[in-house]
Image 1 (cartoon, protein in one colour):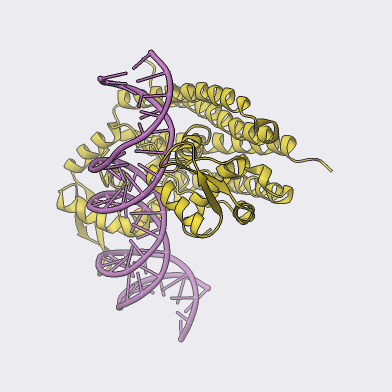
Image 2 (cartoon, rainbow over the protein chains, first blue to last red; image 1 turned 90 degrees about the vertical axis):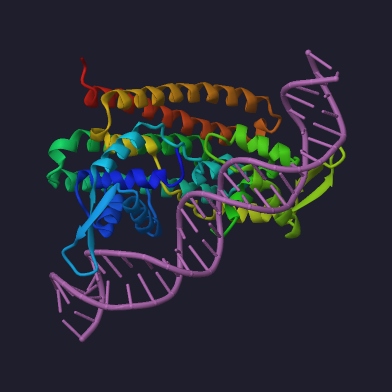
Length: 179
Length: 179
DNA sequence: CCAACCATGTAAGTTGTTACATGATTAA
DNA sequence: TTAATCATGTAACAACTTACATGGTTGG
């Protein structure tokens, strides 16, 4: 998958649901896609400009001055289909929790315990955030059409978090000396 | 966590187990740490040079000409302990499988099905690789001391992969029309 | 003797982040 | 009126990857 193609996929994907401003695209990515995707602020506008040059999106004047609403073109839909058919780019893993666990012998027991507590807290918060996202998306009109796909990503999050919680419990039992 | 600190943590961590050449550090990271950590080739040597300037590692002549064996110093051990006590840097998620799933309505059914098949295949391969890593590490002399920590990272991998396989099964059932 | 592996390093390029800069609108 | 939110963009910087470059050693 070529350069910039990853960001384009996410942006064209959002616009395939409906037209939006750059700001709204950013919102959508950081809220509903946020638990499995990230685009930094400074990437969205340059990428949109490129997509417009390539005729994959078009702009219509927005509700406010200085704002423009982006719409996907039919060429854009074709490109999106092609991008989605390509194999996902695997991300290089950098899991700080497991790195620390691996070298856990060099850690103070209390630091290890605190890290596991943090993982548990964050996992539970994540479960709550999934409930909030579910409330958000079911309110969307496009939910009727896209609902099952959106739900599938939430389920992935839930299953992952449950696995994490199971790991924390197991790891506490093995690595922390009960006093 | 400051600049470069992440790579330093991994490298100092490997050297805390025992002395190694740059090449061996790279091998260790890509084999036993590979399922949760990644360092690219071009990062290890510059980072080692920096660590030596800071007195955190020292070099002894290696077995071959042009090779040097790195050893962690006591200052290096102290730094490692400090680095491990810091909160892990969260990685920005970029999960291509879930991105595609979210926009699955724009995908051909067969492409979605193929992607899920790939996820399943890769998950099973990963389970096999964990068995291979387990065989590797139990053979290490340092396993006696570090075993439980190393095993904990493998368990994390296994639990994650199991969650992935459960997700694939569930998602096939919901999203693919049985014909 | 030749391929695979051990071993070290640099340089160019890409990608992605953060901070800066600006200003309108809306709700409290 | 003032803080939050909507809205767009750029420029500098940091991080990371890939390709290049080199050459010794070991096993088949």
